Length: 295
Image (cartoon, rainbow, N blue to C red; front, side):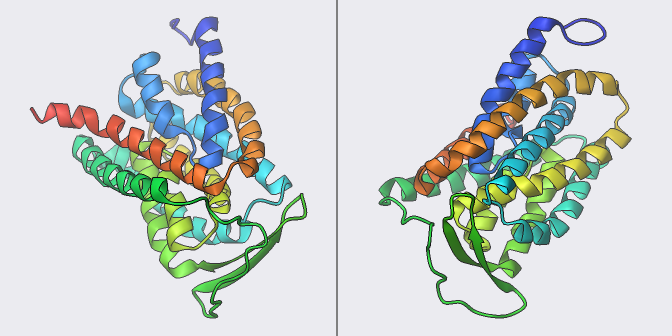
């Protein structure tokens, strides 16, 4: 790294890393922050960690925008649900961003508790999914026990291949998990997808492919609000943030376009396994240093 920016080798490495992260992230509905942050800290030497999470937010925003646009063009995005849930995700993200900059001076305890929660949940889901048989296709899947009311809503979507996908959204239960995910996005510098995806799939009832695509769509709004909040409060060199964030983000845009296109070809059960495996790795990464500091 040079004094006023990054050298050409670092830029190329950031672009390559962005492509790889961007390819995987939209398939499972995350923004990529879970990988971006340790990459920036341990490989590129970015310090302190709050700066790495801010740089990550730039890349996550570009990744999610690219994936969402592609999902929309292919008819694989539940915009109605995304806009409904993002109403509570944005305030949660702003709150988390404020806590990260002004309140939480030592976030080790928060990270450690979050790592335990996510790690335990990931292990339980991986054990269940590896015992499970292959998922029934989501295509032309009929609505199950439709119920009408303020907190429930039916969906019928037709994608660019002409496939029909039907399901029912339980809005009430989903709102709780989404707000919590938005707050974590701002506090920990991640897109929030690690919470959004299971909330949308398990609590709100979206098929996993649509939970992933809708999560990417929501992350655009949440991370944008988080980024504006944190850049406004940031007291360092903003130019340095973008000198790392833009190359990483540009690579991620290219990867996200390819990943969101390929996602439909992957079975839902495979994507679930991949999601919870990434979640487990993220939990280990997030909880390792706080654990070591206890001794």
